[in-house]
Image (cartoon, rainbow, N blue to C red; front, side, top):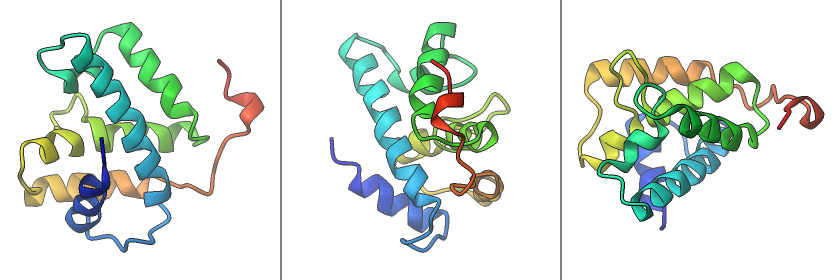
Length: 134
């Protein structure tokens, strides 16, 4: 599955420059989460997007998503912000992947929330590979 349309949409909706260093984190995170969604769809999930949510996914699914996102080498607060930004949050934020899949743009409230998550993504503060654990 090509994620180029999603990447361009994300840049446009979040009012980012294409060379924003946070996109160097968001793009591989999109790839990771899309792979989780495709696997859930392959296994017959009625709503594959639930697989990547922090609230509705089962414990094993949440842990798997977390481990996969840890491969990006981000500090925990940045990793969580990327996960919330793309997959949604228990507070009711749908996440960029769901909003994109609905074929709509961000509301003003969603834009503000998403930009707040962007402030937490710091690609320059990676954790050491050896401290990432299993």
